[in-house]
Image (tube, rainbow over all chains, first blue to last red; front, side, top):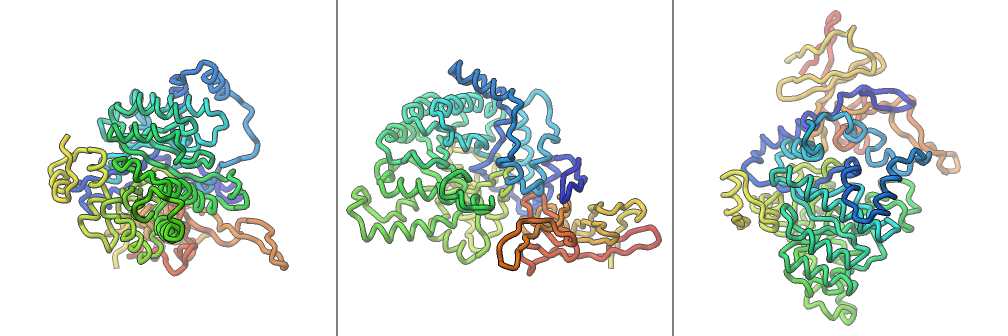
Length: 413
Length: 121
């Protein structure tokens, strides 16, 4: 296939085959004997918008379903490319423009087949499947549409996709966070379904305080079910504070950190950790460098202004160390700073490997495996042991089982 | 020094590329403006297939004398090749990572014998 390069020049590349594209990842997996350790990817994605025709049928409201289907057929596309070419860097990350060229078998969900390919190539045993386009659902102007789309997506995912994965893919389902009552209905409806380990809030939103009283029933319902909650970040060029940025790089680097910093701050200083001590909370896809910053900043302010946080019984950083974080996109530019970050966050027990595949800035398991300062226990825990313990994931062979037992992560089914 | 046959020069079009195995390494060979360039196909970032992605001219930014920006443009002289995994860009003529020129891909010599092309390693 041809890709467009400079001045309209065409460059011929092979059609996409995920297994072949990731052949070097497979070499890494074999060289490092990943088959002996459970590797869990706590943040992987699919492009649910490619399945929109299936998903939309699960929308409950006739009017919104008709509105959505009608919109899918429109031919009046904008002439201004709002986000085209940014994630894929103008075609430099070839799996984006070549995506439609990859062949899959008929009769099975395409997303499952593609997922199995990259998981096998990387040596990943389990992955938590998150959406892509739905990560911006919090920006939808209609609360009702957010409800409808989350409901439809969660039904489609749990009824059509996850059952086809042989248990290797699970999910933390999207919550329509603009409507706390609907969030509760989602938890009560989907919380007990197979392959559901918790619920996910997209943090790309600024008008929904996570500490609002209306959400307490939602958190309690998740905690009571022994499930987890994840806050998944993202970029938003439309956010007022980012409108001055003229490069996607700036919006992306700042946005992912910003939204998790915003909501994590509200979560911590409002004592949510005291209110729901048994609720595992995970902060996803903001990298790690924001964590030591926020720990230092909140501890500093808390020491001066404890009267504003009367629910806290320890420093904000202590509550942050009670929560979980996904690794990707892990900043490895300064190894000393990274080691310090791992120490500050108790990475050995609080950090979970994430690839973010197939998105452009994905991380391989080797980004963790090869870190020179990790103990064997930390390496095993981060790459999958902690996730196995949290989500009750079972080893896929005897060597994995023995390693889970060795490091205290084995939870019999 | 080991040598590995790449192909016939007459069949190697300008702008084309070949990927071959040479011992423990994979090597990407490019033909650019009539010259051959060969580099390790393992990206310095996370080990992706550095030579198998897009080739694209370097993006530049023009500054006027008063230091105001006159916008982005493609270089007329500098060509890069891009690792398809994450977009790491390498200078076609040196193998240097254009984001940090202190690191570069291992380079191999390309030798032409008659119409036969070989990589030496």
